[in-house]
Length: 529
Image (cartoon, rainbow, N blue to C red; front, side):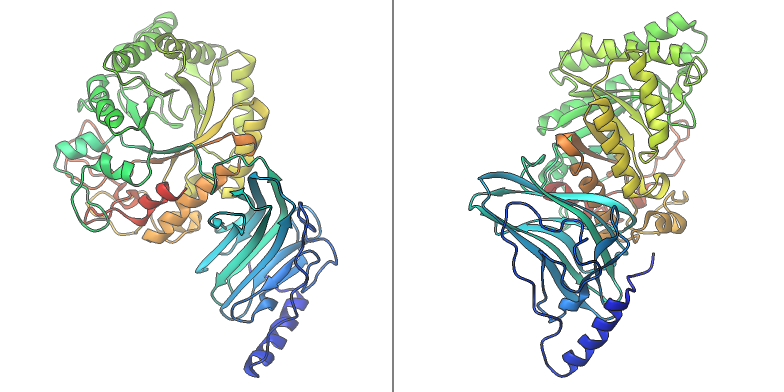
């Protein structure tokens, strides 16, 4: 998508350049500050294309009010707010709300951006506490973001802010300001999680982890110090390398709980990787009848979870299957036989609740922006009475689509099925270089598809954007995000293939530790959400 090019904007830019050269104030005088308890002109429809949208004020520390304007091309109406200029600019469009009762308030808006700014965000300030912000993600699709603040002084200012380079643009539309915000101040989400299934093997093979200053630290202590509060562990039935089995999961669960983190257990019901492209039975179950297979799902699930409970590390949440878009335990439980699949899922869910009734059951699909598929899938599950508590999706921006598609899908799933939703897997690359001989999955073409640069800051921005989407799910149903394998650095012997000790990694450029084992800026995102 190219930047805005409305004739009004072009004319204003030309006038601004002349006035700036003359040392005069650039742009028209700000419109009067709005003073009411609701947003005026939330869709920027009043007066059409305008340099001064009614109800809003424009200001600029560099005298570039003209970089803020409305133009044709709204999300739901005919017009939108845009920030753009041919040169570098700093501008904000804001509106003050007054007469507010004390409490939590949330600002929401639909946004899109070409990216590249020093900063672009929505803010709530002057509300009685610290200013709260949410970044505007790089996306060509309309995406809803939100930010929440506590109002104590009866007023609050909602602002759209750009500190931008030449040619950078953002669009904003359909702004809402409502009481009873769904998150904590600043829009915090309950779950800030990581999948660390390969961490134990990494450390057993000599892997080390350092903080941003270079000091070697216990990786779990380092994760919690940066705001991580939930850890995910996968379970394989009889893996060739002996990792991710019952015994190793128990070991890691003890370490996780000792740090005060909660635990998500991810049952693959396989001896190796299970995902949309493969759902292979464990070798020991290969000859089972369907009744035996159902009982094996129940017994395996119960056995692992009961052992966790017995050692005082009860699972807080459990996935019955991993990325089961096309079912699990093929061919018996493939999604072209939903009667069978429902029986298997129900067996797993019943086992979870038999161990601990308060443990939440998640059903987890990949392709987090694929609403039509997910609606079909969960219609099937709910119509057959499959018991579950949480909907989880994987969403890798470079594989599964835009932030906008993720937002639309999560909002719909949460509303349609009345369950909380979370992103159970996401990740992004911080470099295109490799640290072992295995070609990395995240490459230049996936960088282009993902929309963020393969840099430490690009990785952090991508993760924050996914958190922002989840935070914006209405009615408090956005539970959180799990970053997949942030500690999977390129340690010899800890490769993809559990049957091949010499296999490489392929993931190290998406870890949250650089090739010197130092924590990257992406890790700090968990503590700022």
